[in-house]
Image (cartoon, rainbow, N blue to C red; front, side):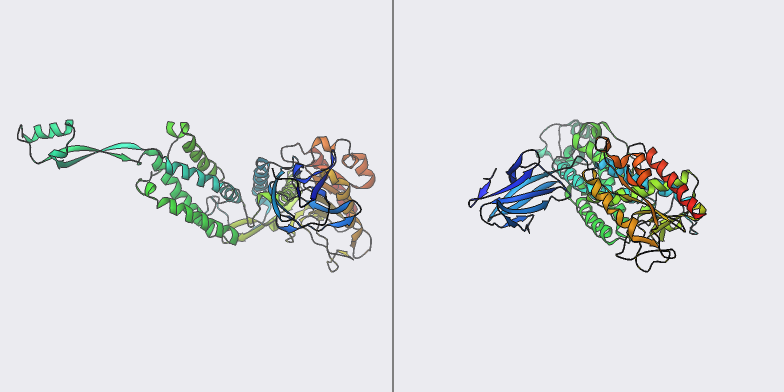
Length: 493
C-alpha cells in the first residue's frame, strides 16, 4: 500500500467507531457520506478526477465526501500523487437476484393488468416481437462480457477430433500399410505390381463435432435475436445490440467457426456439455437467455442495475396495482400501456403520469405532477412529483418509495411534509394530502423499535413508513392500501 502522507500532509477520514483514521485504512461503503480532513497545509484532493473542496477550521482543512452509488475501485489524487482504495457494497443493497425478481414481478402484473386496459389494438401472444422483452435484453447487456470470455476460452482450446478421408496418393508417401490400401490393391487385382498412385486413408484434425455445431447454431440464433433489438425505438438499446451483433458476426467469421457446419433444429445437452466447465457455462448462458423468452409486456426505456431505486419505485407501484386488482377495485388500466410499432410497452416513466382508473371515482397515479396551474390540486411553491398517488375529488394519499434510507428515515419523513403542506385543493384552499407513507426495503433489524413503522404512530399522525421488499410478506402494505382506499372513498361522499 502507498504511504499515507504526501508532502507532509495527511488525509484522514472520520470513522464512528475509531475516530480519525488514515483515508486509505478506511472501510468505505457505497452511497455513504464521510467527513475528511487534511492535517497540514491545504492540498489538491480529487476523487475520481473531481476536485474536492475543503474549508479551514482550527484543526485542519475539512470536507464532506459521498462515495459513489456503485462499489468498486476508487481513484484518489492527493498532493500530486495517485492512490487507489476500494468501495464495498452496502449490505442494504438488493442483490442482482432481487433486481431480476422485481423485473419479473412487474412484467407479470403488467400481463395481468392488460385485461383491464381497454386497448383496441389486437394483441397476439405469438406476435412477431413477443420473443424480445426487457428482462431478456437486461440479461444480454449484463452478461455479454461473460459470453466474450467463454468464447475466447473455447476458441483457444475447442473440442476436436480425428476425421478420416480416403484419398489417392503417391505410393512412396504411404508410411503405413493401411487396411484400406491393401483392400484397394486386392480389389483392383494389382498383386505385387503396385501402381504409382494408390488409395489410402488420411487422418485430419477437425473441429466439426456436435458440440461445436450447436455452438455455431447458438451464435447464429443470437445474431438474429440481436438484429431484432437493433430495430426497437430505443436508441441506446439499438446501438448496443448493433455493437454486440458485430462481435458475434466476427466470431462467426473466425477460422475456427467457419470450419464447422451449424447444427439444424433442436439440440440436446451431451455429456461433453455437462462435464467440460467452459462448454457447460456456455450452454447455461444460452439456456438462461431463452428462459426470458416468454410472453410479456416490454419496457420502452432502459433501467441499469445501478439504478435500482428507479426499479424499486416501479415495483412498489405494481405491487399496489396488484393489491387493488385482486380486491376487484380496478376499472381500467389503459394508461399503463403504449402501443408502438414494436409492440405493447409498459408506459411507466417519470412525468408520464401513468393512471389507473379505480371504482368510486378514485384514481391511482405513478409520478403524478402538481404545480401552480394544475386544475383540482395545485402547489403555491415549487413543482412536486410524488411517486405513487391515490387521488379523489376531495383528497390525496401519497405512498413514496425510498430505496435505502434505513439510517435516515426521520429526514426522509420530514421531506414528506412538503407534500402535506404544499399541495392544496384549488376550490377550498385546504390541504389536500390526507396521509403520507414511505415505502422502504428496510430490513427487520433496522425497522424494529422505530416508531415510524408502528400502527399507533401512523394512526395518530397520518404519516409513517412501511416495509416493502422483494421476497417478504406484504400483509402490512395490503392492509394499508385497502384502508387508505376506503378512507379516501369515504371523504368523497
